[in-house]
Length: 396
Ligand SMILES: *Cc1c(COP(=O)(O)O)cnc(C)c1O
Image 1 (cartoon, rainbow, N blue to C red):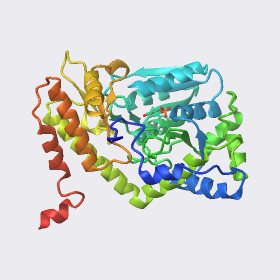
Image 2 (cartoon, rainbow, N blue to C red):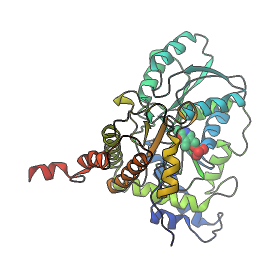
Image 3 (cartoon, helix red, strand yellow):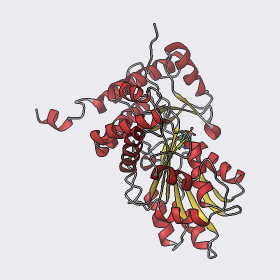
Image 4 (tube, helix red, strand yellow):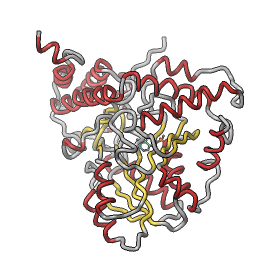
């Protein structure tokens, strides 16, 4: 018998059966007209999830990391300066990629658990009278620490400084799960992948470009071949790709965007917020602090939970996998061994979250932490009671 628990890692996420079936297609000639009926609805749905009506959207066969490369390689030139903050493993890796591309990075180090340093960004931009900074890199949701940052505030900092740098946003673990407004926040490049909020297998890098970012691509000189947005645009104009597209994944994306939009993005965001509230309530009942420093930074897609000093948090992840067949996220980089992470994004319900909370609780009791069985579950139940109809239930 093959039994499958839901996963509680912050990507790849659980895949609804309907999406799995949509990805599982007989081979199609990707040059046949039928491909247009997959490509264009997938692109249109993606743009609505991004809240992007301006600019252009590209979908490459890659993971989110490939999306970072699409952003950089198409808009920047060797030696260009970018401004970025390092507040977790993902922001760290994007900076590393910039350095490997021969870009000059003005790096602001922030304690892991903090959000993007808006005031320091503004200071750095104001100080850059010569306009050397060509892009500001902003990780919307730092998946390593469970910290969400205020992208609209980064845009305001750019505008307040009167600076023309591109605003590039890593929305890999936020887009499709937490509010994200490409046009509304003045984002120039937004990067995401298929295996988080879009509930798909890994394999698509989704990248939105503003008109300004597209214009920058005309003069930028970093080399790009596989990740060329010009080649991709030409492909789309002919209902095709510059190479063989991942047809099954795109068919899955067509469905997953429709599912998100049918649920309603506001409802999707509210569901993630409610589930996250329950997970945070459980952590509080366990007497454990979050890695995120303050409530305004709490991520609704992943919660990084600190364990007591001297306790190796990775043990929780190991024992959960070994004894209960359940996957949680381990601590990465600076917080390795200090936190474990509960991913709660994508195809996730209150009842699924309760199973993860209950299992994490059993593991921590097994490992001798001073936690009472049922305490976290009860705290989450108090949040989830009455389902999505608390007002109606209260009135009865
Ligand atoms: C998962 C993730 C990535 C990397 O995506 P891959 O698909 O693993 O390449 C980048 N940024 C953030 C914030 C992520 O959560």
